[in-house]
Length: 88
Image (cartoon, rainbow, N blue to C red; front, side, top):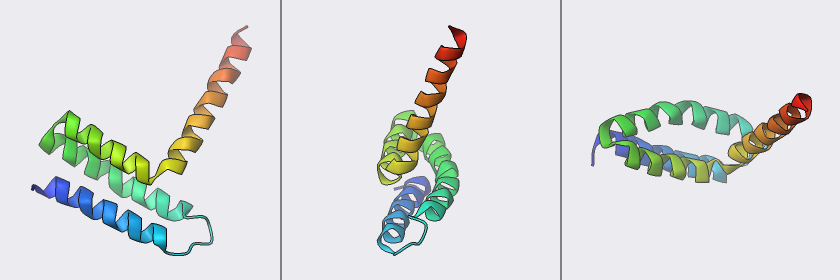
């Protein structure tokens, strides 16, 4: 196992431990920190192991941080529908 996969595994363990701890802001602050730390780790994994392993690690991260992805998808969909209405 190389360092990048080890860091990704450590990130996954830290994400699960942080999810178990109580939070007043529904874990959003922790999610932002995990995203900020996870993006460089994802780049490092992709650099060392190739794009397919990078996509697997991305899917793992998205499964842990699913609510930011859901809200981003909803926001993007609303913006795209707004652009369609403006272009008519």
